Amino acid sequence: MPHPTGPQEQRQPPASRRRSFLKYLVGGSMGAIALGLLRPNDGSAQDLEQLCSTFPHNSRCQDYLPGVPALDVDGTPLAVDTWLPSTTPGEPVAVTGIPNQITYLVILDGPSLAPYGLNPRCPHLGCTVDWNTDQQRFICPCHGSQFDGVGQVVRGPANQPLPLVTVIERQNQVRLVAQAPILDPR
Ligand code: FES
Image (cartoon, rainbow, N blue to C red):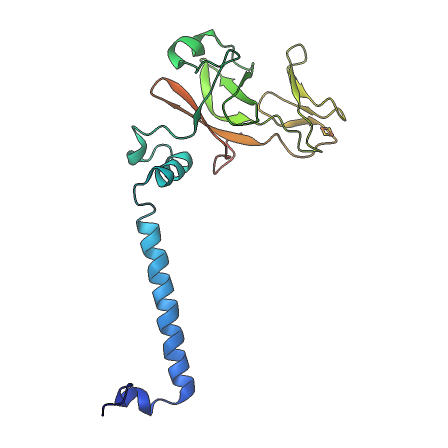
């Protein structure tokens, strides 16, 4: 009756067999991770959303619309070709789309649309800041923190900038993704 382990393995002392097993385990795990990196998604809508939200310029995302459409005050999706020329650089535009949250779109020279928007939740204690056109600043009604047009702190007590969301312009739409860009572009 053949023994379940081979003759060479039988000759290995227990510590050596443990090392072999660990090498097998680590090698297998590394292989699985590598495969996952090489093949980050399997093409499902959820995986595409994740991929295209994080890497909107990936070639697989040309026709995919990640996130949700940005809506104006009437609840109408923004059409970039008609809306953007009517905006003023430096004057943030409040939109909805992400559930339970206003997002301020940042208008750059051109006018052009910044690839990020501002979540007006004050980093101090969480009040909602408002854009003040006269002062050209976001002002927090709770303890007076102030932020410039791209959300950087101008006055405390807040000591962090306004949080970001990702903004993607595609197929004449403005899309909002409820996660910050990988790198803060400000
Ligand atoms: S919550 Fe905004 S300054 Fe305190």
